[in-house]
Image 1 (tube, rainbow, N blue to C red):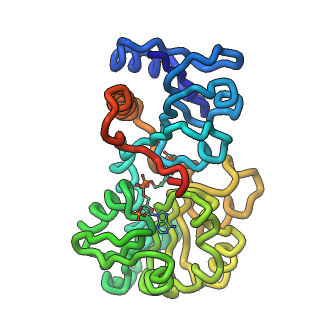
Image 2 (cartoon, rainbow, N blue to C red):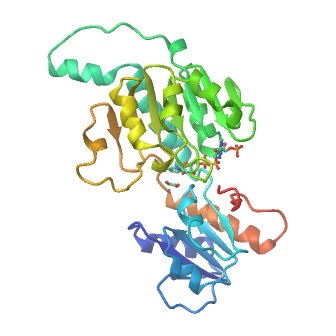
Image 3 (cartoon, helix red, strand yellow):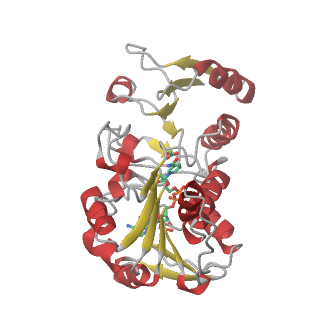
Length: 309
Ligand code: NAP
Ligand code: GLV
């Protein structure tokens, strides 16, 4: 069995090769470079170039070393190529931490207390009502449900929206385009964990952000292009949105001078909310490779290319 590793984004390659040899000792693993002969079975990729797939049309499957497959599916892939993605693989708990941190920081007004400390101001702010702060999670997949599980501990009213109907404990679940407006209108904090697809590109536009309760707060940890950033700015400047925590933006890295860097109501992080954990990721890949080699049932993490996630 021959495996190609093409792990861009500056991940040091030695540790990946070492762990792959340990988990799949029977495999020959090579780091991708242009011009390799078309004799590989599987590719493990993050941010691969088009050239890899042009030169390796015989690949049986590509394993995406992340959860989101939008960049990979944007390439011209061989029609029969199976695409698999990471499911949780250590990212769920990171997402849960990230959302709980941003949510509680907003709800308990820690930014305001920071400013008060700067001004030696010992004023108590009136407590806020949890009932007035429903948390809506867009995307109830692997990561959305893990985040919901964590948020539930803090007893906020919980709402969720997905394509197909879900039934999750303690959550009011909405499904499909027809229920999106009702979902948004009920939420004060909106957590976005949707995949970026044709159907979700720009989904958080002016009209949709305006449907959220006044003083709403956006937490986007999925992909920047889900949000129309100029519309977000408008809603922030008009005060309809109290603020936003963004782990992802349309152009990454965010260019110097971009308005998001300096907006007083925006908290930014550089796409770190759910980082790939090498050991967990490779364990999942090894299981996937073995499942494909055995044949039979569809392996876990198989992407439905036609629907985009
Ligand atoms: P997932 O398991 O595939 O879940 C996707 C969820 O979104 C599902 O509930 C799905 O509905 C819903 N959905 C998809 N298209 C929809 C539509 N058109 N309308 C309504 N709901 C729709 O994905 P995941 O593993 O939770 O990951 C979610 C995303 O997080 C990834 O795609 C990636 O972009 C992002 N991510 C970001 C980071 C980071 O560091 N910032 C790290 C990891 C992942 P159904 O349940 O009906 O299928
Ligand atoms: C990171 O953004 C991922 O999709 O895993």
